[in-house]
Image 1 (cartoon, rainbow, N blue to C red):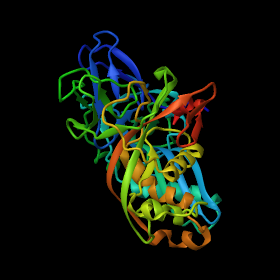
Image 2 (image 1 turned 180 degrees about the vertical axis):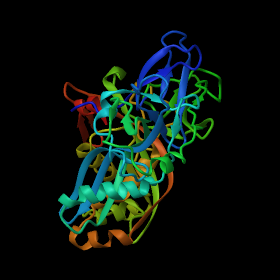
Image 3 (image 1 turned 30 degrees about the vertical axis):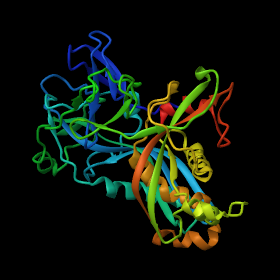
Image 4 (image 1 turned 135 degrees about the vertical axis):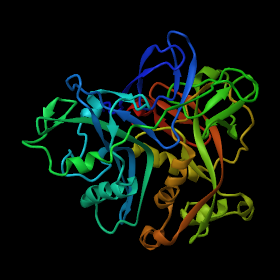
Length: 415
């Protein structure tokens, strides 16, 4: 798979040393001063493409939405999946390219800062409208009708591209080449809306709010852990927030043979179909077992991967874990083995619930037309670390009879 992750040039906020990050990096450790910083942007990250304009030219930046994630579509014969990485104008204009093409993957970007010189055109097209345009294009190849669609694992950002005007022509400042034969007639009106940037990247402390210990995690993690006080933390608006979590047991002699994969266990309120208990799941999925009376008292939960993995694996894994319905109560505390990082937030689990329902519900022909009337509302969630045994090629959960290929995790860095 071609690496589609953006590369971003960054400077340590403590000592100013240069570094190159990928777009999924959140926990930054400076190689020079060793200070850790957690990067946070509540309204999405913003980047600028580097320019090659001659000295003295006043730059102005045109905004583009960039979306990368999984798109699931429920059609008459099941659920189709697609990984997409696209960009589109964030302000309607005939004078600028419609998309960024491959230049965002080919060049090293910079974080937008208040010190970035130039003026920035405002965002005029909401992302909801742009996403509707994306889906209309992708849906042309899908059979109709489309009963439901969901975006999962989305990485949304704004990328600003530099331009300048000279000699009555509009220039692309990345290539330093003119866009046309003459300056657009309404360019003055367009530029009159451009302003300086007020956006700023936030940095959160990586000391445990409970005990003051250093928090741990790989660069792309969305959850930081503290081994000193057995706690887990996720980024909030301006501080770290405690996260409820647990672990499933697995009795083995060698902890090094275990990798703990994180899953979101979500309790929901469902309207339009009876799915409140394990007995309801047996009937809804038409499982080849006879429901027992005691199963009516076992609450039903959705289980969704809390880590990135290709869409062809994500949905089967979510479906198998949901159908397995692990009954062991998650134990408190962090497991002793290796933890795979949390790279999908609980919001993505919430977005995928109806698609997971569509993947196991039976009969499809009768229930798919009713999907639009079914509501699946998350009520509570828990992060659960599930132990998987390592083998040469696979990761296997023997109690739940679930396995995945190890190279699927290795390839997830491009998603």
